Length: 573
Image (cartoon, rainbow, N blue to C red):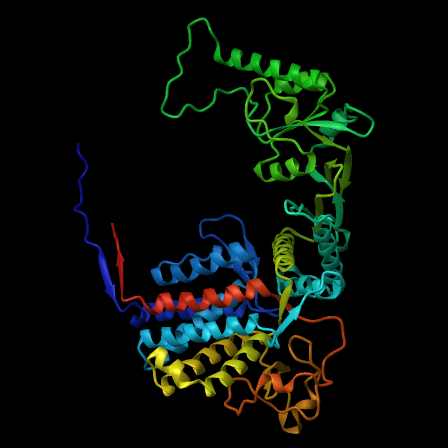
């Protein structure tokens, strides 16, 4: 009996998507989620699939946005843009999401057309990026790789902004120093055009204290205790050299996938036996070439394993694709992709292979002759905090790599956002007639968009306060100052503020404060530099320059894309 065939439904076309109540509520909900997660005191989110699966407790954008299932196309565009930014830069994902939501909300409140808003805000974005790139930028800090202070501040800022890691101050300092040591160990000493950074691999171990985390040269591969006992010691080519063969092809003995093709086999031939014979021939060549360790990305046939072990060759299989590049880099071996005759030029070398016991786990440590690959054993109390700490450490390592490429940082703790709003307001007052003519807008329209832009930046900084405290900004430097909740400000602000959000400036009696977002007369930002209020302490709150610049650009351009939407066409079939 034939099943009933339903006629195809026509696509649904929606005009003016941003004017719909459902998208306003959805954007407001997303905005509330990301804002509540922002900063060191951000609230954690419990992410769980409705049909079961692993539970995730986090405030990090990478895990948070991956766990959000959006149904509306506008939200999908926003989340996809931020996720793409995070995949490239790791950091500042929440910043980009919050700013984008703020911009959409504030621009919608204006009576201006989207075309006018987009043109003016593009100009404001260029002012921001040009200011960041200029030597006059007062929220930019040069990072000296000959001094660890700024580098430690960058790492520490990443870790302290992830409260689900549940780190104490002592643990944060310990992991920050360990991460920085790990990263610097992967930076080669020599200079040249073909020099590349090494690799650091995080090996998570649940249970031990955070301060039990440690750094090991080479690669750690988890193996059962009985396996390690049968493998060691390893056959050596010379006292300090173990020859290594690296296979990316499966050695399980199965026929390769032929796709849609056919394999013709004679009636008296067993394909399985022929494949096993080929594997044994390969094993004989491995033994003849005095290979000490054979590492395979996939599975190795038990018979081949037994043959190689009988000839004192260590066999390690199922290492996975992620371990292949570090193995290639540390051994100099080229991954072998065929079962046929193997060239000896494909082999690599190791200095040693030893057994390492960590908590309840046993590892095989492959120690290279060079120092390009390092394994960081990362410990935490339970699975949830360990997963969050691993994500935070991966972000911090990526931030250091980006900073090595572009040795700059931006002031954190909300100070870059408030100072940038301070700067844009100053520039908006003196906007020239030629710029207004190029933008085809009036001075009033420009001021409206600039004010909305600045309020959006200030709103991001305001999200750092989750406990009801007051947010202030000084009228001379434009930095972020926080006052604890329940403070009576009638007696004077200077009695309650200690330092600005980034820690660069300490309180002064002659500073004038105002509530963040209120109207005040601005002065030229550069006129207030060079005073004696700068904090001499080592610890600053710093954000990655490349990540923050990209986050700002992604937020503004995604806002433009969403505001420019006139129709949404959806296929409902």
